[in-house]
Image 1: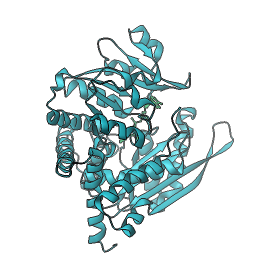
Image 2: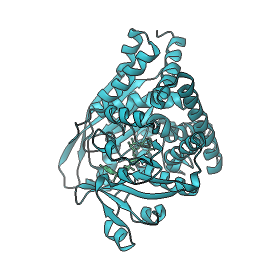
Image 3: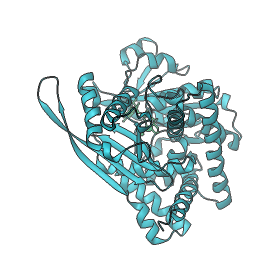
Image 4: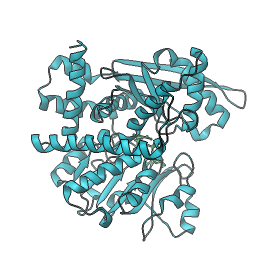
Length: 428
Ligand code: NAD
């Protein structure tokens, strides 16, 4: 068994390494190693059976030198202050590398949302806002969806905030439903952003996308859209996806000998990314082990589930054919696995670059909310593609100029931008 991963230690370790490479002033490094502000609070929720259950909620604001803090809210049973800290820190680097004028934050609740009724979920969402509304806002900190949260939940949270401040405030939260202040293209933004990054990496490596095959871990928002984009934008094939089965309390890889059809699989997947395995098997899909996805004979691996999935143990399963590891998830690769990937010369598109499409369209959503004027899906995706391509090229340039690992290069680009903003504001 591999060691359990503390995501925050991992995020700090990655940061310390690049702070060293950059020769960053020790006092400045100390400021950036920790979040600026952390909130932890109780959310009492009246359940349908009349009992009150108390949940623990979090909001962590890592850095807001470049603009209002920004980051998703996760509803997951194993949520801790340390995962939220790590994710908030990665958000700072993500907004910086994507070059959007925002900082980094993250929030969450330790809960399995699938165990709550719709009414209980709505009360939990409103309860989260009731506890933190004074510390969020369009010019302070703007939350968004993440694992276990949906556009509908963002709609409830926006409504609760608007009631508390006394005016309609769509810009307090992004990832809202379209028609309720949401942006077209937001749902597919992260997955398509992953695919635009892969396209640029393939250009650099001289690969023909239409001849490539990918294996994906996860089948939630990011994975579904990465699968659709890989097939429909790049013309490639997807061998498998994987998912967490709540009934069996284990993960499965779901593959098809001719390549998966993501639209079909999506039609038999619930809103939390759990596939109906009986229906999949009836349609000729094969159910394999949790780790089968990473061992597939493919060109591209896309971890798009949770952190720590490419680790000391699973990295050894990666086939020689793999050229690109595109990190759709946040923090999917542990430092031990990173060393192996680097040694093997696999081209890693680091998480906070690879999955920056979501926050980029979240930013577009805020811009549209401010203007009260909405763009077409094509306009959104075109702007997204441009932003992702520029971000990828900046990181590639740094990789080549400094002869460093892509992850280090992405950190170097991001940290440099954040430190410059801190300097300009006179913080350092
Ligand atoms: P989601 O809740 O929609 O989907 C998560 C998927 O992972 C589900 O299919 C679930 O069954 C699967 N899963 C969970 N544990 C697993 C395991 N052990 N093995 C295999 N599959 C497992 O979440 P999402 O929004 O797609 O986010 C996925 C990752 O991408 C997370 O790391 C998240 O932080 C990151 N991310 C999401 C966004 C976004 O816009 N949604 C943006 C940037 C990064």
